Amino acid sequence: MSTSETSRFVRLQVEMVLEITDPAALSGTALESIAAEYGEPGGESAEERMQAEAAVREEGAEALASLIDPFDLVSEVPGVELTQASWSSETVDYDPDAPDDWDLDDEDDEWGDGDVPHNGEDDGEHSGASGGAERRI
Image (cartoon, rainbow, N blue to C red; front, side, top):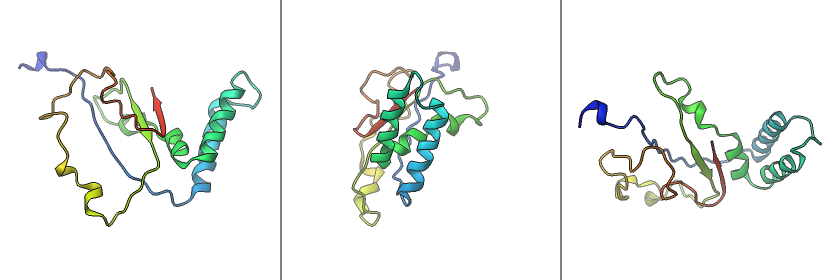
Protein backbone atom coordinates (compact mmCIF):
# COMPACT_ATOMS: atom_id res chain seq x y z
CA MET A 1 0.00 0.00 0.00
CA SER A 2 1.48 3.36 -0.95
CA THR A 3 1.63 6.29 1.44
CA SER A 4 -1.17 8.06 -0.42
CA GLU A 5 -3.45 5.04 0.12
CA THR A 6 -2.66 4.76 3.84
CA SER A 7 -5.07 6.37 6.28
CA ARG A 8 -3.94 9.54 7.97
CA PHE A 9 -5.95 8.65 11.08
CA VAL A 10 -4.50 6.76 14.02
CA ARG A 11 -6.30 5.47 17.11
CA LEU A 12 -4.07 5.88 20.16
CA GLN A 13 -5.20 3.90 23.18
CA VAL A 14 -3.88 4.73 26.62
CA GLU A 15 -4.93 2.95 29.77
CA MET A 16 -3.91 4.16 33.20
CA VAL A 17 -4.79 3.30 36.77
CA LEU A 18 -4.56 6.34 39.02
CA GLU A 19 -4.68 6.43 42.79
CA ILE A 20 -6.68 9.29 44.29
CA THR A 21 -4.51 10.34 47.18
CA ASP A 22 -6.38 13.55 48.08
CA PRO A 23 -10.10 13.37 47.22
CA ALA A 24 -10.76 16.87 48.58
CA ALA A 25 -8.06 18.41 46.38
CA LEU A 26 -9.35 16.52 43.34
CA SER A 27 -13.00 17.49 43.81
CA GLY A 28 -12.01 21.08 44.70
CA THR A 29 -10.04 21.44 41.48
CA ALA A 30 -12.90 19.89 39.50
CA LEU A 31 -15.36 22.33 41.10
CA GLU A 32 -13.09 25.26 40.19
CA SER A 33 -12.95 24.00 36.61
CA ILE A 34 -16.75 23.71 36.47
CA ALA A 35 -17.11 27.25 37.84
CA ALA A 36 -14.76 28.55 35.14
CA GLU A 37 -16.59 26.61 32.42
CA TYR A 38 -20.13 27.63 33.37
CA GLY A 39 -19.49 31.13 34.68
CA GLU A 40 -21.71 32.69 37.32
CA PRO A 41 -24.29 30.43 39.03
CA GLY A 42 -27.89 31.00 38.02
CA GLY A 43 -27.35 31.34 34.28
CA GLU A 44 -29.06 29.41 31.51
CA SER A 45 -27.04 26.30 32.28
CA ALA A 46 -27.61 26.38 36.04
CA GLU A 47 -29.19 22.91 36.14
CA GLU A 48 -26.35 21.43 34.09
CA ARG A 49 -23.80 23.09 36.37
CA MET A 50 -25.53 21.79 39.50
CA GLN A 51 -25.54 18.24 38.10
CA ALA A 52 -21.84 18.46 37.22
CA GLU A 53 -20.97 19.81 40.68
CA ALA A 54 -22.97 17.08 42.42
CA ALA A 55 -21.28 14.40 40.33
CA VAL A 56 -17.73 15.55 41.11
CA ARG A 57 -18.51 15.89 44.81
CA GLU A 58 -19.93 12.37 44.92
CA GLU A 59 -17.44 10.38 42.85
CA GLY A 60 -13.69 10.75 42.36
CA ALA A 61 -13.93 9.12 38.92
CA GLU A 62 -16.35 11.85 37.83
CA ALA A 63 -14.04 14.57 39.14
CA LEU A 64 -11.09 13.06 37.32
CA ALA A 65 -12.98 12.69 34.02
CA SER A 66 -14.08 16.32 34.23
CA LEU A 67 -10.44 17.45 34.47
CA ILE A 68 -8.86 15.22 31.82
CA ASP A 69 -8.48 16.76 28.37
CA PRO A 70 -6.98 14.57 25.63
CA PHE A 71 -6.17 17.71 23.64
CA ASP A 72 -3.56 18.53 26.29
CA LEU A 73 -1.80 15.23 25.52
CA VAL A 74 -1.27 16.01 21.84
CA SER A 75 -1.49 19.80 21.53
CA GLU A 76 2.31 20.17 21.54
CA VAL A 77 2.99 17.29 19.12
CA PRO A 78 3.98 18.74 15.72
CA GLY A 79 2.05 17.55 12.69
CA VAL A 80 -0.89 16.14 14.67
CA GLU A 81 -4.42 17.42 15.08
CA LEU A 82 -6.95 15.83 17.45
CA THR A 83 -10.07 15.01 15.42
CA GLN A 84 -12.08 12.95 17.91
CA ALA A 85 -11.66 11.84 21.50
CA SER A 86 -13.58 9.74 23.97
CA TRP A 87 -12.44 8.93 27.45
CA SER A 88 -13.93 7.42 30.53
CA SER A 89 -13.07 6.76 34.13
CA GLU A 90 -14.43 4.35 36.68
CA THR A 91 -13.62 3.26 40.18
CA VAL A 92 -11.87 -0.13 40.06
CA ASP A 93 -10.50 -2.68 42.47
CA TYR A 94 -6.76 -2.66 41.90
CA ASP A 95 -3.92 -4.38 43.71
CA PRO A 96 -0.53 -3.08 42.55
CA ASP A 97 1.09 -6.25 43.91
CA ALA A 98 -1.14 -8.61 41.92
CA PRO A 99 0.79 -9.75 38.83
CA ASP A 100 -2.30 -10.34 36.68
CA ASP A 101 -3.81 -6.86 37.10
CA TRP A 102 -1.49 -5.26 34.56
CA ASP A 103 -0.31 -8.10 32.32
CA LEU A 104 -0.89 -6.65 28.86
CA ASP A 105 1.01 -9.46 27.10
CA ASP A 106 -1.79 -11.95 27.77
CA GLU A 107 -4.52 -9.82 26.22
CA ASP A 108 -5.65 -10.46 22.67
CA ASP A 109 -4.46 -7.82 20.26
CA GLU A 110 -7.88 -6.67 19.11
CA TRP A 111 -6.38 -4.06 16.80
CA GLY A 112 -4.17 -6.48 14.85
CA ASP A 113 -0.68 -5.50 13.74
CA GLY A 114 -1.11 -1.77 14.18
CA ASP A 115 -4.23 -1.68 11.99
CA VAL A 116 -6.97 0.70 13.01
CA PRO A 117 -10.39 -0.89 12.45
CA HIS A 118 -11.85 2.37 11.15
CA ASN A 119 -10.69 5.90 10.48
CA GLY A 120 -11.57 7.66 13.70
CA GLU A 121 -15.30 7.13 13.30
CA ASP A 122 -17.03 5.79 16.39
CA ASP A 123 -18.90 2.60 15.58
CA GLY A 124 -19.58 1.98 19.27
CA GLU A 125 -17.54 -1.22 19.22
CA HIS A 126 -14.38 0.31 20.69
CA SER A 127 -15.72 3.43 22.39
CA GLY A 128 -14.09 2.72 25.73
CA ALA A 129 -17.30 3.15 27.66
CA SER A 130 -17.24 0.98 30.73
CA GLY A 131 -19.44 2.69 33.23
CA GLY A 132 -18.33 5.58 35.35
CA ALA A 133 -17.67 8.96 33.81
CA GLU A 134 -17.30 9.37 30.06
CA ARG A 135 -16.68 12.45 27.94
CA ARG A 136 -16.49 13.04 24.20
CA ILE A 137 -15.32 15.91 22.08
